[in-house]
Image 1 (cartoon, rainbow over the protein chains, first blue to last red):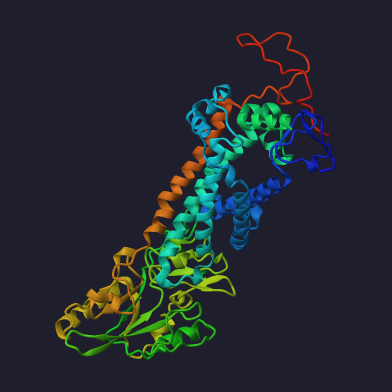
Image 2 (cartoon, each protein chain N blue to C red):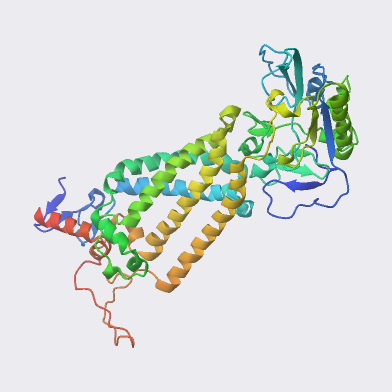
Length: 235
Length: 320
């Protein structure tokens, strides 16, 4: 990269668009998510929002009002499976990109055991976490697991006329698995939104502009921060 | 498909009360099919096609007299032909006119997520309202008799209406009118039950069918179409007539415990997160721009330690 210059301590980039993951920007911010990661996250995120809202409208007549803004029951039923494919494809993309970073480590186990402090916002008490903490890893695997179930059961629900009478057990399983898995993702989703939008200031911006402050990295992902700062200063 | 003159006692996916429930003293109607006197002439199949003005489709030859393997979206009434070997080695035809059973507790209606797409009138007829159908096919999953059929062109599901348009005008269904042997009867459920029991008794006592009986399965609350069978112990021989039909347990599990559990969990989750926020609030990050102060506070609030100020530097400036 011709426009990347090193001043001895920090790798600096003049143009934010060229910043790579784990770079430190001139103002000290650390790049956490590349443009590609943010793009796939938001394709997945907006697909999920559509699927959740239309799914809820079909789930219960009490929630039919949601579908008013989505064009009604019939349009929702027509588009839900197609958006489901977008969701499945972007989830696959996320899986390929992130699965390697989502294995549980010893640090994760310690972090998970101290969850109580995290819930009570006693973040100083928390053992250091890596680039992703145990909660984020569980969110990832939860969405991957439910995503597979939702895709398989969704295909059965999408095309019921191709499931012959003899294979009706498939349909019986699908009507139970699809909403169950969807409910699990809604639980994960609510926690995800709460953590990223309301609880950890700076987390939402990391998925919009890609960078987090040094203090954010140090506070919530200390092992990652140490690795980034260490690797940058070694260069 | 006409609901103008009939009141409704059950509605699919409906969040409010049901307008017609308990408002009418009309009796439940019932179709009675005596399989022992059916000759398989298919007049009922033709009459159904005629009255309901259904487009023709290709028939499928499967080495029997049967018109096609199963009912279609445009073929609601199909006689199933089964060659049956009796215990003494002799052969007999088991012919069963297959169509919607108009269950008192319909699995299709239970499974349907579209408000008003499936209704049950006060006279017991279960009817699909295709204009409200969303084509999800859940009714196909809910039905224990494999009756609702999907039309890929219109993306809607169709089935026998028990000629509700005729019945609401005081006429009998078209199939009943066409039957040449009188094996099809139509009337109130009570009258049909009486007639059926008498005929079953006759078969048991005079025609050497000791297991003859009336098919009115309690698993779906009884049906608006009853059969008189030669042998109640072997209903499956009549083209797969289930001996104890009921709404699939997964559909029941999905529509009752899972629905309530899911709704309670979702509302509980929202309340829980809100309570957490007003109890613990957001996580504090002294370096966050919103929490950064350009001047030190005049005096720390009583009872709280002074806020640790971040070191001077460029850490909080936004990259332009």
